[in-house]
Amino acid sequence: VYVPRLDDSYSRTFERCSTDTFQIYGPCTYQICYLYLYRSGYDGWKPESVTVYSYSYPPVTFYYNTFIPSGTWYGFNYCGGYLASSAAV
Image 1 (cartoon, rainbow, N blue to C red):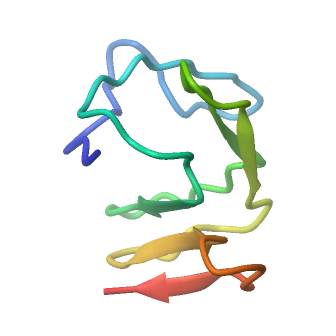
Image 2: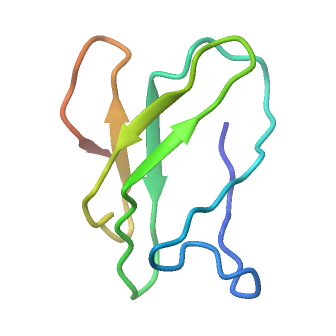
């Protein structure tokens, strides 16, 4: 599921030391095994982790704890076994 924009300057999402929760709906999927984030702009963003909850599967957590590079998709793909974090265009 692709969500074009989650940030909102009025709601103060993605602020330092905050926890942000979003409900995102999409087509039925299999168990989540990959997650990529995209950042644009001048300020840095260092998410600690992202946890995805699903109706049919246990939650899965992706641990980032690194700055997300600007202008590229950055994340994890565990679908074929363990893979280190990688960038995808």
